[in-house]
Image (cartoon, rainbow, N blue to C red; front, side, top):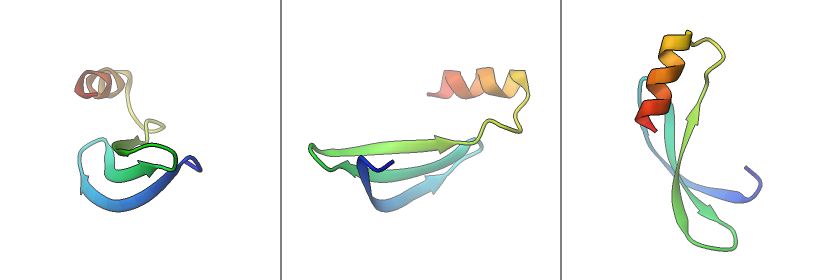
Amino acid sequence: MNKYEKIRDIGKGNYGNTILVRDKKDDHYVMKIINIAQMSQKEKKQCLKEV
């Protein structure tokens, strides 16, 4: 995350938070932070499909 500067929160979903970030060298990106530690295998597969 040190490579990116957080601009603002965009939203929250079932699998994590979405934030607008800026690469300190380039441009703006959207980043989704997903906590998979507590997910079942089925949820992990669904999460990967969403990405």
